[in-house]
Length: 202
Image (tube, rainbow, N blue to C red):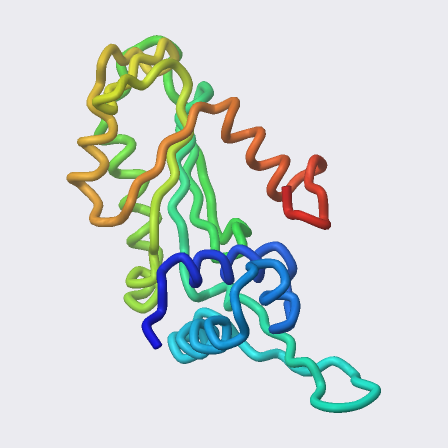
């Protein structure tokens, strides 16, 4: 049976929210049939993305197996350009920060882009080869405006139509995602913070 990418995404989303989950919960939450879930989970387990961590007690029949995301299966680079400092972080698959630091910037003065590049490279150089290979994507939070071509105009950075998207995507061979600071803060609170609804993850 061919594994659809959407199956994997849906299953990973359930496992991320529930931490851990049973197969029955995954089937219920995704709406996928048991065969699809079984094939997709086998793929994720074989690739070290999902782990079996035990079984629940049962009054009869087969005991439900508990499944959990492997927090070290992937890492994400985070770059924050929204304030009066450059902030960099590396998170695991759960979004927990593994390391972070920041550098002060002069408000309104043009920021040299090489400082952003050097900060990201510093994160990568702090990883061993195995972990570096598992860096999956980068997320960038910024103030100001980004046009359709990915050019940013931001007062705090002293940038006008700076081609941020093209520069980052040409320098690093991972998917790069961008978000305005207010939206990123909202997503943080609804996904992990005080505004999270534990029944849905949002």
